[in-house]
Image (cartoon, rainbow, N blue to C red):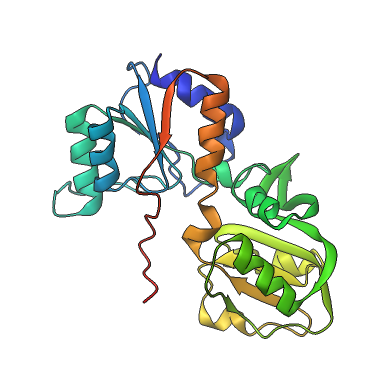
Length: 258
């Protein structure tokens, strides 16, 4: 099997053509024609993930976040990105990322968030085409109070705490969400009629929300981690006997809650 065979399956699900202009999804290290016998999945291509790939015999790494976001001016082992690049190249490991390409399909990152909460009538929040666009919006099976919604989110995402704006009064039916850093879609969430918007990386001033609208920050990592299981199932379904695994060091969140 070749690297291109794995790429083909991923891009049938999350086409590179839909990624954001600033993004760098795709194959960033290696050749598409290289032979591949095993794939390791992780959220971020860290030096530790590359070391794990070497130790388990994986010759391809697939992540959500791209190892290289923009041009590198230097590659040094003293820098985490440089160290990961050097180790991957030295070991002959191909590195591929499905970032906003996987964010913008409805069955991707944001759709997985909606599935965790059991939302109904799920559709794209900021559509660019049929089933394509950032974020999703849907409805709770039954309207919830703000306190019930917080409790549900904490339970389903295994969170000890969340950052939120002032809880809304009454009940919440419609919910919008976007995995990762979703602050740019706050306006779209309000336009959709959602009373609650769930995302990550929200800055202080965004929490001053208008009456009747609530904002919840569950964390960048926490909102995106389900993409690994999605990619794993995708590869396993298409290649049932192929060696594919999710990193054993699953919790790679660089943010520590102390």
